[in-house]
Length: 130
Image 1 (cartoon, rainbow, N blue to C red):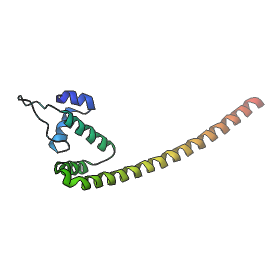
Image 2 (spheres, helix red, strand yellow):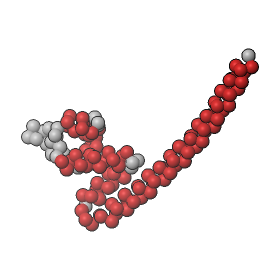
Image 3 (tube, rainbow, N blue to C red):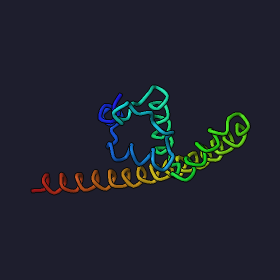
């Protein structure tokens, strides 16, 4: 796949794909004889992984470190696992905080529902008295 096709597939701009490659978020992409990037299935898997991890909140620096460790091979398995465990814990805490926020919003909404119902009853009582 060329960069335009990959861009469309993942919803990333070509500039973002070039940037990810430049800073080492994805491994260098092979090029055709004409110098055009030719993304392989392996490249697409890396892009998918990076997008997933970025959506989970991992920083570029953490992902760069992860890729460097990945390139070292099996000797870095434990260290890569530890990075993912740590990042999972950070994400789980964010989810808990978001859930607390949702619960607080639900409580506030219920309060407004009660006030609206009370206001409707008052309006109905005023209309009946007229």
